[in-house]
Amino acid sequence: MAELARIHSYDARANMVAQATGLSDDLYHDLVAKAVQAIKTSQRQRPVNVKDAVVKERNFKKLRQRSVEVSEFSYRPLACKHDYRVVVVRKNISVERGEDVLFDEYRYLFYITNDWNMTPDEVVAEAHQRCDQENLHAQLKGEVRALHAPVNTLNANWACLVMASLAWTLKAWCALLVPISPRWANKHNMERRLLLRMEFRTFRQAFIEIPCQIVKGARQVRWRILAWNPWLGLFFRLDAAL
Image (cartoon, rainbow, N blue to C red; front, side, top):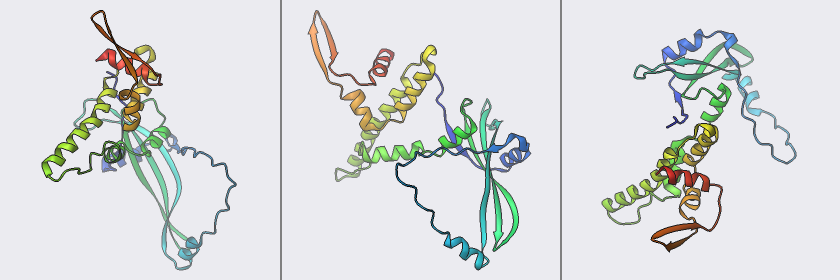
């Protein structure tokens, strides 16, 4: 079974900062931010930055970001048996007071991943998306209603929570059990990831609420699919695997 790509933020510990500091400046490049989808309206004029003028006038200290650069290196945690990829973001922060620049400093952010194909910029953009744990909370609360308390006893509400959580976990199990064909590895891995991150409402409509006709005859029972949806190919591959 192919390993799913994972991206996690990592603490800026002393050993990590030392490795990032030891990298040559040639290994860093400017971080390319993910393009924001353009809105088809007229561009508004940027308002005057009143706060910045007040900070300078009152001689307050201010942190101003000058540049954001990105690089990468391999790292093996102590409890692991193989190396992982670490993408480091280096921010050049200028410390100012009034009109004077006091000094510049670097601050580092780290992201550890098992994916070696994405560019460092893509790893950072992916890490900045809404994390899977937040998606999990949203789905458990709104879609499967696991966090609702429909009855008046603690044990009964606990049982309701467990059953609803198992319904959500069923979707994740389906995604992890989908077979990956070597010839179509890229396509199948993308489908598996989409299924793993799919909202429960979409999963219910695509994989559970499938209209079909049950035909009995010749000592056999056949399910005849009556409507097509884009997920049927993945559904049949999962059915064959199970």
